[in-house]
Length: 207
Ligand SMILES: O=C(CO)[C@H](O)[C@H](O)COP(=O)(O)O
Image (cartoon, rainbow, N blue to C red):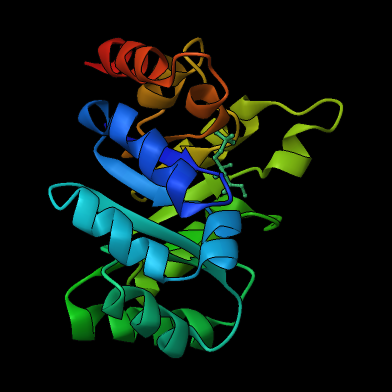
């Protein structure tokens, strides 16, 4: 299972500092949606230049104009970009077409999707690289949030999937046992006083 760092920071300066501390322990470096919105796709280019050996993931959460937005992300240097599972199939297909043109991959983010397992199968047939079973930061903050709901749905889907939803050191093994291809960790790394230590412990837990 790969480990993905999600950088939900706002500035390129902070992203370079965080990725500089953590990169050696992760496989995928994600520019979170707030970072891309605030700093622009130039930040994708800068992170790829700083970490050419890493898979750089641009979390655009595209909802429309899939081919156009995915093409822009790939042109900037992203290896993977996200389109939303709630988007129309034509938007997802457009992003996947851009992925084929550039030789890169599209990840479909299931945030806000009701039946995640069923949608995961549909978008995998459209050509998604993998599907992200995701509960966003706002959903995680609600009473009764349970990561296991994502793990159960991911297992049920039977397709390659990642999990994002407040994964931490004490839950990452459950993500691995559920059969995920990728564990995404944001606050479980960047909120720690020592992000490098947090990332190293996560890496050791799944090795
Ligand atoms: O995409 C995101 C929010 O929409 C986050 O990057 C994702 O949820 C991972 O962060 P965390 O581990 O803190 O949940």
